[in-house]
Length: 639
Image 1 (cartoon, helix red, strand yellow):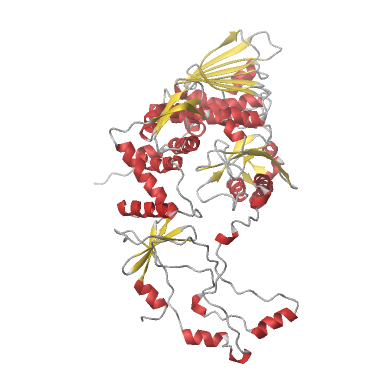
Image 2 (tube, one colour; image 1 turned 180 degrees about the vertical axis):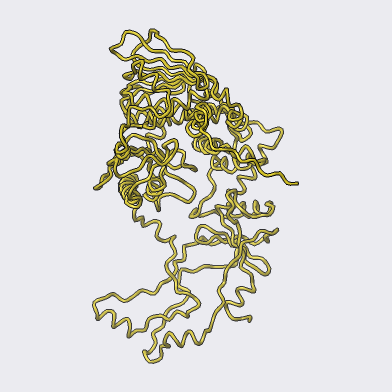
């Protein structure tokens, strides 16, 4: 006999259960506590904020400020749910100027921690002390303390151990806490910030530091040199801040900070518009960096759509996207013009290497007749020149029986006008000519002994019995460097090359711990790093294949990938890092580099040693083939 399901009656939840549920929305991780407490300090008019963290926030989070403080009555109300001094009526939600307004943060934090609040107003003789354990008020009293507020959150999630199990490692949680402090330090000029972890100062921003100086203290001096000011305005929005020049980009969006009326936010319209401003300046997979402050009327935006107020919605999302795109585009164009030397805009030296447009072979190109040329000149226009690919001068090879000439391969002959075939006749005579499409090669290939011919200063042509191999010289050299790097690092007798002068690398405060925890990873990649004090590390030795000037950029790119965290879950993460490390290798030949006979032979010899698949470290094919059958079909020698 089946039992009927038990139906529970509807009941009002006890206060402690309701507070724990609310805490689940507000207190996602230790960084959420830091965010709420710092925002309260800023709303209180503080000009100095100190954040102390122990155990990445699991053991202690303490925020001390010099704001206006609270009276005893206000302090007691502040730990109750839905108690706030920032909203009185529903209409106030449409014109919120403060960072906090819901009045549930302190109650939610106190529900899942051992909570202590000490606060004093400047006109009070004593301070008020309140202690709450797991949402239960344990103590209230008077105590001596300076004006302002100090809130201590001990043993976060002590009464919800299941929630504590879902926290990430110390490095990850600490980086989130530091990120919160950094964002507020960037958007609140005129406020001093100090962040301390395990009694070690991680971040120290003076009160009078400018935005550029704050960026230098947080991200390092190398960022400041490649950042320009943005100032834009339209009818509804104004923008200011610092954005990177086109040459300063990252593989992630971790260095894109957006603020709305002083509030750190996430919004797709702002993010997409910001990146659209860099269109044609960045390659696929690279993202710009920037700190953009947006100012607008609070009536034009809804900030009450997310539990932690991270996301906002604009009344006109398209208008917001267009406005920031135009402001960024204008700034980037001006920066790009100032970076480009005038002579590089139209360099006469590069012209001979650029192929001129040639007529498609499949439509039977017909040179202009004498009558057409005469008619053009009588209309005041110069006769059209016949497109012809320039043939670069080539030094005669004494070992070769092939001779080259500077003369054109054919000379156009004048034809009577009535004998010139029309376009339709040409198509009828040729019919449909099969397109010749070279295909990438991934199977084993052994090029013959024929000397490679370089074309367009980019590709090497190698003839085989029944096909023509087309090799990308840059992709091939990258692959050869990568294979050599892997072989050297796997060699048990490998010894790194000691540097006479160590290379100093400044990392963001949030990444310093990450570097310390992964020194062995960098060593496996051929970089020996040591702490140099603070957030600075020194590279003392490197793999002999690396170029000194490229080491810093390679380390930063590897650090970007390390910060994502998900790579640690894959067995091949070192392989991914090696692909990044190849960028520090001594320069591979590039497209446009004219090679000597020995260089061409060296690349082909290196190619013979490769094993399939024939791809560069980034996955692009190295070689394509054009078979004899394909060529015969294109010339209609074979059906």
